[in-house]
Image 1 (tube, rainbow, N blue to C red):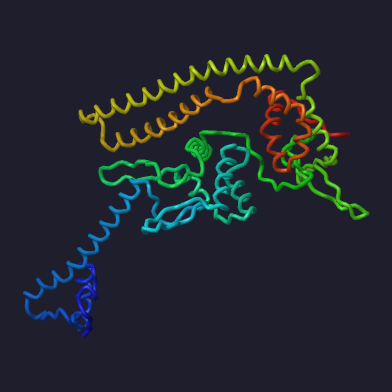
Image 2 (cartoon, helix red, strand yellow):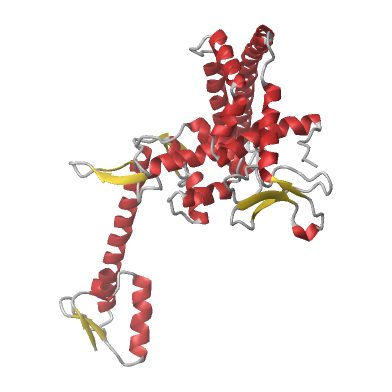
Length: 406
């Protein structure tokens, strides 16, 4: 005999309990509750046994349902449930209410991650490696899960349940990034936004062009390394990988200086400031007009998507379109509409610039005069970024290269 206090201590699942009672019976063992004794030789006792076993299972199911509904209701109210994501901390108010708040250390790190991925200069996994070197230890799987989490832009996801569709609601927590920046990162991850990216190379001080410039002989990207001189000093060189057998080798300090000299080509010549301003003003006026027409185009596209959803809803009512297909189509349209609304808000913001255009142009021209100085004063990572984003593309379009020294 196996003794226990009550039948809910034996099992809180009726089907499992019956199966175990049968197994024990086959072994000649009788389960018995001290406070709820049953004589199994009496057939009517099976009715009481069913009651004793079903009651705790019903209690479990009811408790689970209440918890699930409570968590869903909390999400609809904008509350984040569970362990705080990277960049946030779990907090408790005086009344016992749970909430999340940005972490003063990890929060800025997550902001940097989103901004860097959106720039498109580095691949997302390169960004993860760089941020790990900064002290934020995060695995690859967790990294990609976090950067897809809309909680960082102040949204809470309420997943689809029965007849209810998935929805995003405004969270009660403080967002770390804007919704527009979050969507930019999603575009990068999904491949909708294709940008120029760097090779996965280890950056070193004094070698900012590593993995960027190409060899004139073998047309391959040059790597870089350091050699120790006879007097103990280190000498840096750009060269092709040895497996290709090119044998090219260029002094890094001369190449770096050539790169800095290239920037002088963008400095306005004497007396050209007014022409620069006129050209910039013409471009600005054209851009402003295009912005207005662009807003009209975005609005028209949003109206078209809404009309498409309305038309599909009519087809569902007429039994010409399956309900599941309608839900998929509606979800895709709503995602497109959300992106277009963000683009529309950005387009409106471009027309409300508080700085005068004259002041902005003057600041830009002043920066051009200091271009070489700004380049040399920044760290190796920024040098590589500036090169890739602003100058490599220019040389690709004009089919020019930096000539290595003889």
